[in-house]
Image 1: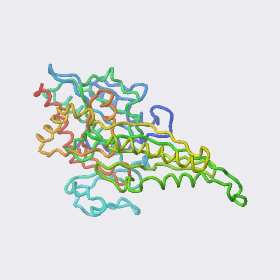
Image 2: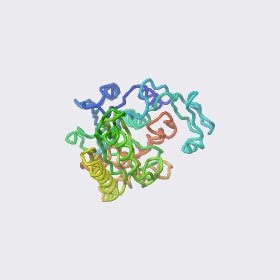
Image 3: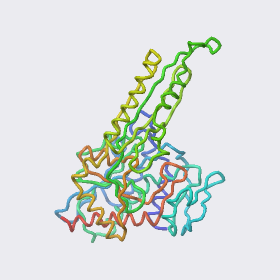
Image 4: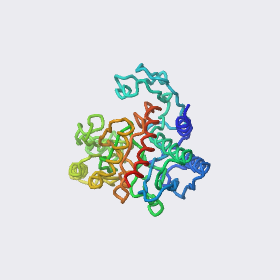
Length: 405
């Protein structure tokens, strides 16, 4: 078993789920369990690594040659709250042959339901036991960066400039850069290792917002409800029915945006619905937000009182608006991938990364593939072969800066 695989298996067994309902930062203290381990491992490698008050891990790999542009590598330690994340029990399938994968009695994967499995036939892959997510998002990236740090330590002949590392908390809930230390992180540009298929380069992502709707009903005994009772849950249903049914995640792909109901809870008198709004096109994104407001205005007018309130908060924007003027960063990644024998795959992200916010805040930061798949659920898996190739690409990419500069 390679050191990279050992790292990954160790990291995924640490529960690091972030909590979207928390008001603390990081949102869950258990994320620091992994962060503190990373600091300890980096210090063992003789690096000056530290964790700050917010749970960010920082480390600088000092240049061993002069005149090279400083670069950054970033991954996040938290895992999604969309599926159970404690007591992860990973299993390695050697030389996957494309057959049905039985995770447990309830969950199984096959190439017809998950065609992405065809991409890893012949690979050694790591799957879950069907009871939890795996944590490939983004512990693949964490393990690759850590193994890169070890590579630099083990190969003093490998020439590189300053390389800044950061492991962020709370990426999965859109807060991963809230306290990012730009004063310390002196890279001119960076890459998040938070993508899927190896060789992937992502520099277009959704514009993103969250929407909170609060519905206020009028409760009265159902026996005397005629022309009096207004059920807030029915208001929530009515609102949802007025959204475009084709613009939901299950009906969209590629550049198509969506509205996604992530949570709903309530009683007759009060109901709350939470949505995320996504679109690559900034005009369509603005229209989606306007649609929400238009429906709210309609409901309030229809029922004659303030029965619905809406709060929309922008989360991040399409990094392409910035990176389109700095395509040398993409070209560098493409060159590294090609020199590692892979054809670069450029696809839009149907989601977002810390890199989106970092880019808009002044640190250009596209996203690279790590070899993880089916993120955020029990069907998550990782290809050891692709993770290994992703590490090779990072080594090549950082080394190319020495030649280019």
